Amino acid sequence: MKRTQVTLLGLLLALTVFVQTTTAQYLPTGARVLNGARVPLLYAGSDKLLPLVEQVGAIGMTVSDMDASVDFYSKVLSFEKVSDVEVTGEDYERLQGLFGLRMRVVRMRLGEEFIELTEYLTPKGRPVPIDSRSNDRWFQHIAIITSDMDKAYALLRKHKVEHASTGPQRLPDWNKNAGGIKAFYFRDPDKHWLEILQFPSDKGDRKWHEKDKLFLGIDHTAIVVADTEASLRFYRDALGLRIAGTSENYGTEQEHLNNVFGARLRITSLRAGSGGPGIEFLEYLAPRDGRPVPADARASDLFHWQTTLIVNTADSFAKRLFAENSRFVSPGVVTLKDKNFGFSKGLLARDPDGHVMALVEK
Image (tube, rainbow, N blue to C red):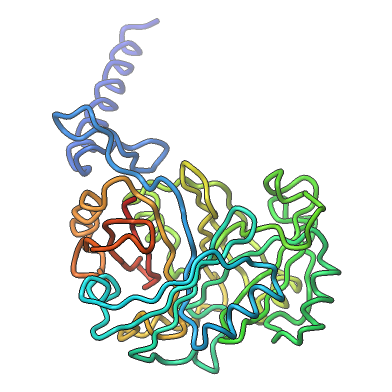
């Protein structure tokens, strides 16, 4: 090798080390770059890992009539009620960011996953806007897996559910990551969006291919986001969820599934380390006219959802989210006097689009 080549190689190596070292100086403590992403490492001067979300837990929604909602989810969708609790008090007011509340919370299970329905006896909130569309950023749904789309759709028609899609759609085979999936959007009594979804044999978790029941469990909750990269900075970089899959969906099937003409979506799926449902971003590349979450949204509004994230230390997450200038629903970490919901400390925070995450410490 010529001397000039050796010299150039040395300069390139030196430049690479300089760039990596300089970049590391401007990352948050305990983070480094790996494949373009910030990855949690160790606390400075400590042998402890930065806290990560351990599991995605129950997915919650606010309802107007608990008995009617329990009847719908149990009789139509086969959910089983596992607890029914009524609470009030200052600690719950601080947690939910809502003064003077009294709420009834029912926890229901389908397979291995849970939903939590909350009725605010006081104060009452606003209904889902009547002109809501699937690309508005208050959109959230749960994807309920069915073993037989035709039978599931027939059952929903029998119970006269409100359509959100025009009918079940089979995503086209040209879409490598989504081809063959069958899906249908509909509404519950409070107009929350729900989805039934059937995976083809080459997609989805093994448990979603069982045939012993019509409805098997919840694969994920989907949220509309304005900017995938901004959402990744919250969910991946700050909370530690990992990307599990991506796709770009468009065409007549997607338009009729979402009931949005010209829909073209960038979809990103994330998972927590110890399981639970996934969290799926739906970024509408077109149309871009989805509306933001109202600035005065409250937990008692019927378009309020909150997704439970189980963490090992709520205080560490609060500090991290404060440092990231995240918006909080709770004033900070709230310690509960009782153990009605299976956790001792928690806080509610909003993601960049206003979706609420409940970080709870067992």
